[in-house]
Image 1: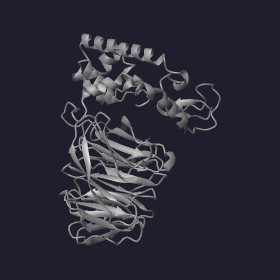
Image 2 (image 1 turned 135 degrees about the horizontal axis):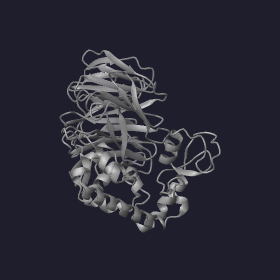
Image 3 (image 1 turned 90 degrees about the horizontal axis):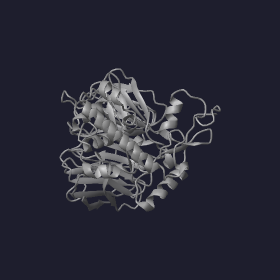
Image 4 (image 1 turned 90 degrees about the vertical axis):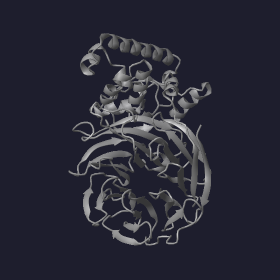
Length: 498
């Protein structure tokens, strides 16, 4: 059981709170607001520090960040400037100028004196915070950039845009290495609102390559489609010569757009906050809800964990900053995840869910090779003796035979399960239960992933009628999605949740 209580509500701001962050010692919390101020409070008693508020911005302060290695606070504003402050005294150090749009995010490197800022002018600027020099400007996105983060190795930056895409940028070459559409804009009009890297590398913290190095970087995103998503980022330094972004899991729990998401300092917890006025704490490894926090009276815009992991701060459009104390939390176990897999289409399994299944049949020794080869549920169903032997280098014949038998059993169970599902709930391409139905230009509804694959392969015709498609537009079929969810809820099934 996870127990969290609200220990303090601070009402010093006169307008919406847009961002919050704890200081490195955990003794103070910083909040940035639409009232043009940045304020610093004592966590223990909630009182404002003597040098607060910081009042140099002329428009709404949209973001704030603290350097993990220098006592420097950065604030960004709709006035298109970034101000660096000495966090212990409130002294203004300098003003960084050059952006032509509102600053939406500031992010410090964990190891270097670098600051990345992203803006509504679709650019990312990388600054040296000791010399105040502009080191690099990354351009290429067609949409306003809302969030950005350095990868843990400081060789790349990921960004999220108003359109909902994730981009991976190489800091040395300034090139965009990969683009993935991660979130729909939804009702909010904001596709991807926040992203954060886990302090633990890899999808599951215990998955390592044979060299002992992490196989990938693990990060979270959230957005206007009410979802939190977890991803593996394979970079040139961690995996191969190419950057690859692989989906890990989708966390469904919020009923409105998700504003922010953050990992705790040890990576055991992931927090998300939403327009639905709630905060959800998740076990990121297993994608399970640990607890839901309520109390704010309007949209919750931001969330932060203290360095010691004992406190959470949340800011809201209700103009308050709340401090929460984590009294106790308990992580999920692998066995609890295995129990829920029976109700989920195998083709929708993530790589991690495949690895949990692999462990349940006694083959933990192959978790690393399945992870490195990105064997998700769809790939699992295509495995045969040849691919196990030559592709995955599984030598013992007995092991290969057992894996194939278990896969056939999964297929049999899945077919039995699907026989009771209404046909209109299944994607016409795969005949799998749809979890993200979209309407294509031919008027048919498909699972987004599979119709996207059809279009990305260069097909310009309907997979159902062979008639030319008027356009490539995919419109979310939210009505059908809600009907599918309602169909399973009375039986207590999680089939519609992936």
